[in-house]
Length: 174
Image (tube, rainbow, N blue to C red; front, side):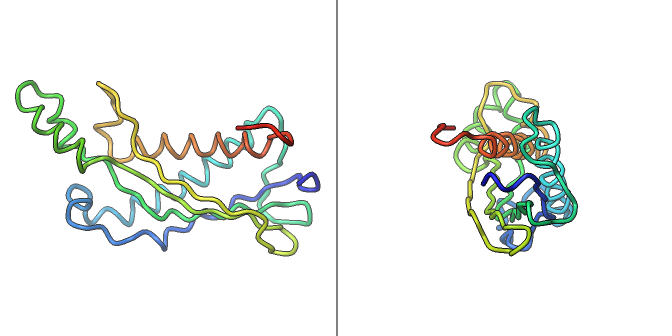
């Protein structure tokens, strides 16, 4: 790992996102493809930004891979937007209890990815990893009334964790 000093964040792949069933498609429907493209770009920019802002500067973000470059390839494999209408109704007195019950059972937003790191010179895969996260629950959360607020928070958390892992010293637990 010590020979790598650069990282390239490849465009994020959204080809593996599954077709949404009626429940997941309920509120976003025809906007899903455009939403996925925006989320992919947000993911790439967020990972790049976390590496650029890293005080350790372990890896320099580059556009073209070379012999000292790791290429991070991310594929989003799940993206379920928040149920904004249900979430909003959940904050209304009296009616909100039923909406919260439905929301807590089936309506959580989520996002999942699979990723790999490649050697920039040989193209050899040097690491693979994946994760799936659901929205974090709280009594009052402004992200509940946005389509992808929870998802964007999760992506930012992943980027932060990945930079911490990249800076990890041998034997250090993250």
